[in-house]
Image (cartoon, rainbow, N blue to C red; front, side):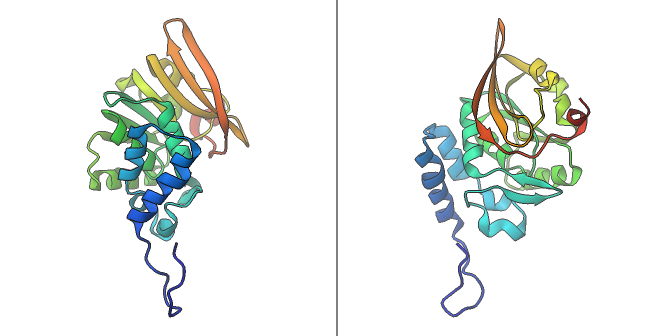
Length: 224
């Protein structure tokens, strides 16, 4: 993508629709993700409209992208994997910690009834809120704040997804996860463990999924 034109001028424009379809086939389906609702959401959301202009041509590459303020947007496969682990059917209320560019929130907006997403970096929250509104995601609600504390006035949540890594699971997030709910969260420093947390009437269960590298969770998470 973005190679030089035949006459050595500016790079050829990217056909984002083609790039999006190729991304789903080569990066997501090929790695075993088969949830039809997740695949449909990944085909629907225009990732290129939820990243900074300077990296737009790379929107569908198999890697994280910088979005400013020391933050990144996850590679598409990780977005799909985390979304699939939530096993959303369409009627859930979901909490996201770490809005970033708003791309993961848009995917969740395709998969769930209501999405509540918190971003600690105010300029990112403002930009994501504006972009999500422009794209018509009326069911996605953006707040600036410390995600460690969750969004207690809207709890409990059927699912929680965390896109920044603390070194432990924040207790407020466990408290705000509904019985029967699922949380996906990276835990640790350096190479982290992407962890699935489920809650039933007997307590909380954990399962390690894979190794990942997310930006650290800031705010109260760094004070614990």
